[in-house]
Amino acid sequence: MTQINNIGLFTSGGDAPGMNAAIRAVVRTATYYNLQVTGIRRGYEGMINGEIFPMDGKSVANIIQRGGTILKTARSEQFRTPEGRKIAYEQLQKHGIDALVAIGGDGTFTGARAFGAEYDIPIVGLPGTIDNDLIGTDFTIGYDTAINTVIDAVDKIRDTAESHDRVFIVEVMGRDSGLIALRTGIASGAEAIVIPETETDLNALCNRLEHGRKDKSSKIVLVAEGDNAGGAFEIGRHIKERFPHYDTRVSILGHIQRGGRPSCMDRVLASRIGVAAVEALRNGHRNEMIGIIHNELSYTPFEHAIKHNVEINPNFLKIVEILSI
Image 1 (cartoon, rainbow, N blue to C red):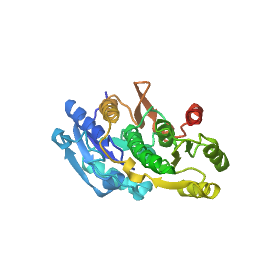
Image 2 (cartoon, one colour; image 1 turned 60 degrees about the vertical axis):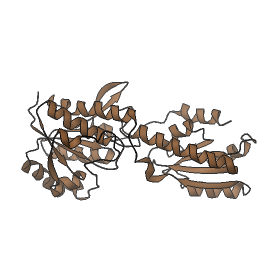
Image 3 (cartoon, rainbow, N blue to C red; image 1 turned 120 degrees about the horizontal axis):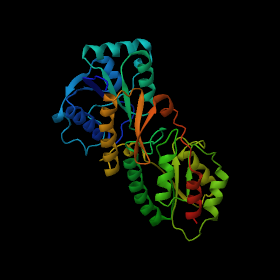
Image 4 (cartoon, rainbow, N blue to C red; image 1 turned 120 degrees about the vertical axis):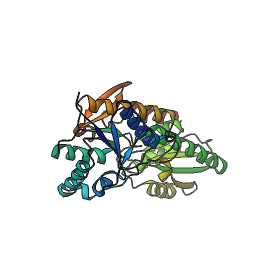
């Protein structure tokens, strides 16, 4: 086992429901193994600025049900530079930190990979992102909560769409990944899904709306924000031009997808891999993301995890087409 005494813990990038459950798991597991835990506020930026403080079991009491992150999060341009990373490392040395647990997504692990290559400090990562776009885990922390938030919102939108015979273009998060739109589109009974992984054919979309069941009193189109057709407003404008008789509305769900109480699935996922993070460091793992694949722990090198070119299952799109009839 690798001799580790003090684990630095931080969250970085976009917040995701379940991050607090992961923080709790890391702190309490470290305590179980008689290790120190040092919290770092505001990610890499806080690491550079010395926003570093000791944590214990009391620090994480009553947080498992809370959304967001008690450690805060921030972007850091300075950490992208060798000079910024050198300052960060000096801060870690000053506080006696000899290992790190990073909770975040693609940008977090890109930074961790560079940091680990330059300095001899073991780092493991926990996948915390609502986009579910990392290689090396079936699900990321926050994804399940986010898609359930979207489902709840779209169900409410469907109610008003039914009442007014409207077409709603609903935009969800997913600048580079359409996984939120894909899964929620199926679950909400959307007539069509527009995602960045596939080329958007607006004429085909309009044809589907035109030739669908005539007795449908509402139609929902789910759009990932990174689609190549220009986003929900542009798609809505195209539909209005093609079908001026449709009462077409656009709804951008935005940051409500990031907030809220984490679901049971996200709490359990975060707890499992939070425990595994401390045990992985004790067993000599470094520069790896910890995830779960087929209900078993997995360890993926950062350079593979951050490629995030997750393939879209074409059967999902076929399911949407079949069930929208």
